[in-house]
Amino acid sequence: MKFILVFDADNTLWDTDSIFRLAQLSLLEKLAKYNLVTEPESRLDILRKLDRELFSKMGRFEYDFKVLALALIYYCHHDLSLDNSVYQAIADRIEYKNSEFYVAIDDAYNAFQEGLKKIPELYPDTEKTLDSFSSLRSEENVLVTILLSEGEPVRLKRILKEQKICSNLFDEIVVKKEKNREIFENAKRIGLKYFFNKRETENTLLIAVGDSLKRDIKFGNQAGFITVYKPSPFMGKEEPCELDEKPCYTIQTLKELPPLLKSLGLPVKF
Image 1 (cartoon, rainbow, N blue to C red):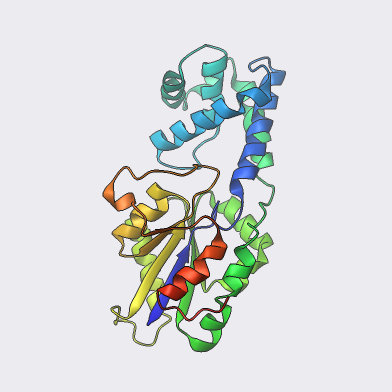
Image 2 (image 1 turned 135 degrees about the vertical axis):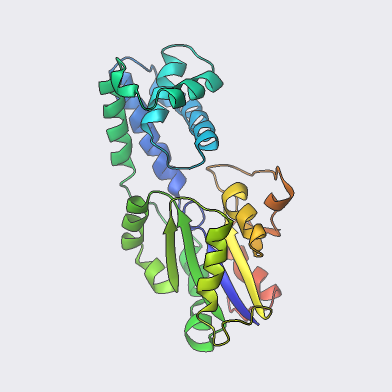
């Protein structure tokens, strides 16, 4: 039996949520200087709710974050509801430069982007977990590891450059702006190229690990992977809305992964 193991990165291997939280606070503090927000720290929860709604509506985690600043202004300064703030910000996202808040939005956006330049810390079990697979990759040739991540490519490449562990412990690193079934199908094809018999797939076990039911588990299931869900602080513990969002397994930390994979037949030592 051979294995192809695909990992998500943000909030699966490293703590992206903490970086985004600090960047969002910087955005709030900048808007407060323009008297568009009061008590910025107390507004962080609503900002994150707006962010999740915008992601849901726009289909990407990393959309144009000027829209986030605009939505917050509509919510705090114009007293619109959360849904109406999101709707209006999306409708006005092209014409925002004509807004009286143009300078404030740009300043807040720049503060946010500066905050995103910080490098997130690896979760405590990440390095040890990935290292436990290294001998299977290099000596026994039964495992291929692939990092499959979506998001802003410049941000992710900067993180990958700093997190040298990733270049050492992954056979392939694939960065895309968004995920779909075809991306996971392509990861499978990439992994199979490492094995001698490239066409024989029945003796290969496909495993995908991620923190999002809609972006990792759903598409992993659709592409024929055994899916492992690791909830993160960003989205919290999600509940499946569709059958293909239901994970095969759920773990709380990465240290639970090696024994799980061993039970599936991977001869991992941990």
